[in-house]
Amino acid sequence: MTDLALSVLDLIPVRSGQTTAQALAASTRLARTADALGYRRYWVAEHHNTRAVASTNPPVLIAMLAAATERIRVGSGGVMLPNHAPLVVAEQFALLEAAHPGRIDLGIGRAPGTDPVTNWVLRQGMDEAAAVQRFEANVEEVMAMMHPRGAAITLPGHGGRPGRTQALLATPEAVSSPPVWLLGSSDFSARLAAEKGLPYVFAHHFSGHGTAEALSLYRHGWRLAGHEGEPTTFLTVNVAVAPTAEEAERLARPHLLSMVALRTGGEFGPQATVEQAAATELSEPHRLLAARMTERWVVGDPAQVAARLQELAREFGVDEVMVHPVAGASEADEPDRSPAREQTLTLLAEALAA
Image 1 (tube, rainbow, N blue to C red):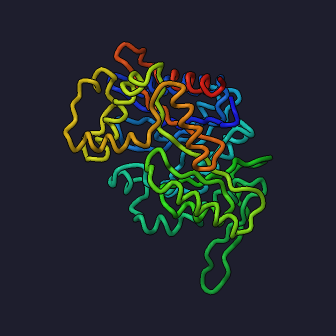
Image 2: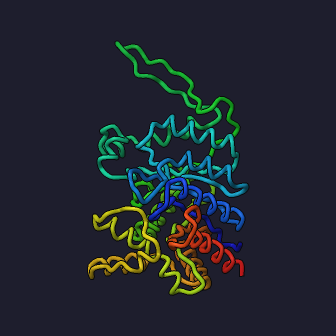
Image 3: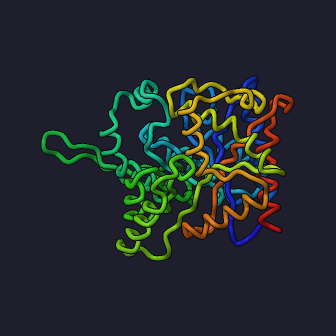
């Protein structure tokens, strides 16, 4: 496209009247569109127990999407590591890398990705403090076990005798391992990524506040740690593109209503259609909240969005932007497609190329 690389973040949204199977089919089409247009990577997130999002299991989705595409890198944005045993994650991504060498990214986060009850079930009662305390060690274990040489694991000793040490491999004969990225919306992951010399992404599309500070902390920590090369990061942005700015705003409204419901404790059900969203009135407090949210989104016609993304890339010092296409679907759209999301990727790529 241009010197600015584009990537895609997909939450696999499920809209009104759509089944999980149809939502997966729509995202597969979107991934193929991104692949054909030259987007760099396509990441899926981990969310649980919601009727609005189908991205419950990133490794399964990555296998599906990588098999359906040819060139684009496919990864997790991210796997919420405290929800899983490190060996399981290492085995999953070692197999994905073996099946699609050089095309897999393992993005790791530590948020629950769900409600408190589901969080308790996933983590088997482990509280948030314990999850944070184990996070750094778990990241190191995943990386070590995915390495072709594997990891040396020492069991606890008993009766004053040392524990037995055993080699542990995520897969028998690996020749490569996927890069590990740390993801976050606070300082914690920025500091840890800098210390470990790992790529880092701040969730600008979700938080929008503190991005510059987190990236500065990461880059400064990287230099202090004395790593070779340059720190690697990019920007994530909610984006909707249409032939006119008015149409783009209309298409973005279903996702906006979902985000307002999420932030205010409302019902987080299947995403509304464009027509349903247009007929939905917000209270004054909710309108103000929606206005504050969309200040950080990039919604408009192709030229407007391309220019704004280039401006953001310069502002934050990145050469890659990961767009989260938030354009909703109309009632007449086929349930196994997301034409407005495909349009967002197409018009944006064409505008940057022009």
